[in-house]
Image (cartoon, rainbow, N blue to C red; front, side):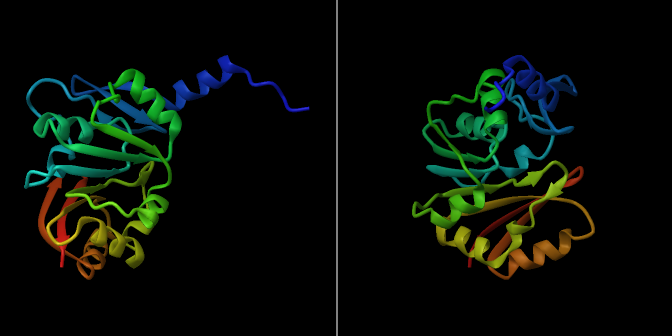
Length: 203
């Protein structure tokens, strides 16, 4: 017989793993010891790399790979009120927590609980803007710079679409940028603290 679920114990594990902390006076979502989202408050973008992820154009649709607490979704919704957003994340506990604590239930946001690589592999829809923010803790997901994934992103965004990558700055960052540049056309680089945001278009 299966052991009955201890709901209180389960909730305790979630709140220890996923919690709200203070980041320079702003509520921040911390998961496994890493801040993954900042609450969007006031008129100015929160500190960090999220503002640098915003597209230069006026997209009507956006695909966010790595949704977490939805900082970028909120920023896009505020700048482009009619934009249609699909947010993909494989951590249902994080999404449930963000719904309660970070107002993630935006009317124009469709949340998909799925592995981002699997979603992209089967995606037939085209998006004007794609944001790639895929990490496990401090660990960069290496599949992001794999040729099949980059080619799929190129197909999803088309020639006019914008693709923004959040790359953690380390010894392999330049190599990752070169690999991305073999498939896509980088046109802007923003360095924000320990993050590097690379904006690209299709070739």
